[in-house]
Image (cartoon, rainbow, N blue to C red; front, side, top):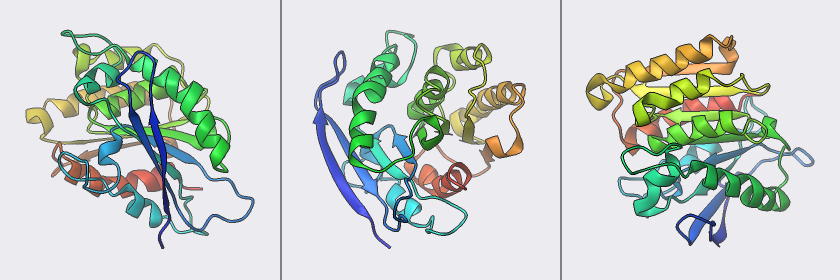
Length: 250
C-alpha cells in the first residue's frame, strides 16, 4: 500500500531562517467521511527517504503504511518540517544556553497560527489537540515535549526519541514539573541506554518520573529504554513503528 507525497512549498517564518520546506505524506486507505489524525515531525530532512538527510531517513511513510486501515490503529497524515540548518539548535531548544537556543516559541507560533490552518484546510483531519501529535529526535524530541506542554491546546501528544533533555541543565524537567497535565495527553519517550556515555538515560528517567507523578495511566505514557540504541537515524527508524502504534491506536 502506497500513499501520496505532497510538497506544501517553502515558507518564510518571521524571526527564523527563511525558505522552510514542508512535505506531507498522506497514507492510502482512509474510510470515506472519517478524518485522520496528524503527526508533525521536526527535522523534516530526515523524516522520509535518505535523500536530503545527513545520516539516512526515518522512512516514516513506510512505518505509517503498516498501520493498516480497519486495524487497531489509525494511520496519521505525516507533516515533515525542515529545520533551519545551522540555526537548528536555536529553533529547537526552547531556552537560550551557551549562546544557542531560545527561539522555539517563534517556531511554535508559526506552526499553530500559520501552518496548521493550511494543513487542516487541505486535508480532512481530526480537529483540536486530540488529533494532533508532535514528534522528533534529539533536539527535535526536546522541542516536541516542550511543544506539548507549552501548547496543549494544539498538540495532544508528543513522540520524543533520544530527546536532548540535558539542554540548559535539564530545564525541560523543571518546566514540565511546573505545568499542569494537559487534559488530552499521550507521551512516548525512548533513549539508548549508552547514549551520551550513559548520561542521557537518567535525565529521561527524571522526566518520565515527573510525568508519572502527574498520574499518567499506562495507556497514556510509554517509556522505552533501548539497550542497543544509538543516537542515530538508524535507531530512530527502528523504534518509530512502536511509537506510532502506541500513539495512534484507536
